[in-house]
Length: 379
Image (spheres, rainbow, N blue to C red):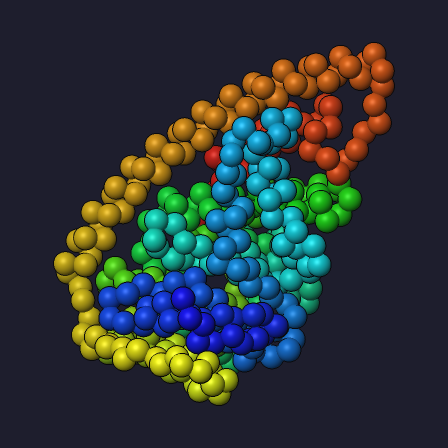
């Protein structure tokens, strides 16, 4: 498929093909290339200080993390979470995510896009950033209110940070995004161990919050909402991370995304401007696109509900199957540890903290992985 843009934006290579360009047509879903393009473009517009504090993973990061491929090739002596981490550890070879305030992870499951943001992974609890002192104030549920402008927020709210994973989903259902969050928290656990020479970081305190945000009124604009969530994260930032976070329900109006294809046209115009600046390759012409100027509602929502009911049932089955597999892995792990422990009694073996296959700690690690995955606390 012909390439129409080969550009470097925010230090990333952005390649757009004719196929990607056609995704701007009415009724088409934003794909991975367009989402990466827009997130990189918007990130290039923030201050240098904010750039240094954040990292955006590729849209392929999560799918690579969770695609274990040939199960027979998986090392049975380590946990499934460790096997997952091993698949992507090269992605962070020159990156320490624990020195970032925000790690953005765009995720696509069952053709639906949503955005997960890992916040302040270096913290171990709630902190008041006005004085840097740990906060002992409990989380509270103070109701819902409209988001005031930033100066008013700074005057009227305490600036609180806390380690957490926020879920921005334009069709909130909780199930699939919660599983993604649990998987990301497992990944963080092993990433810390790998990055800091076998040291352990207890992430049980890291809460997960499916934030209540404006929802899509159709079944085509999830990718556009991910783009807009990212933009709003910087233009109207969260100041107080005390849970639960309610005030983002009025973060923006849905019309800002869907009315007269506003967001679709905005992203299209940005891309077209970059293409014109770089010039089209010889012999390539851009196709004529048609936009839709009305909001599709009721029929789409009914179709979406039917689709996600099927997805929920499928996810329940997959989660049960995976849990059964991990139970079997646990039994194999215990058997393996017993054999290895007997071997160590006979011959001796020096511990290696950076490995997940240490003799006596592996069962605890597997149990911890299981707790992270299945007992995750959702707010």
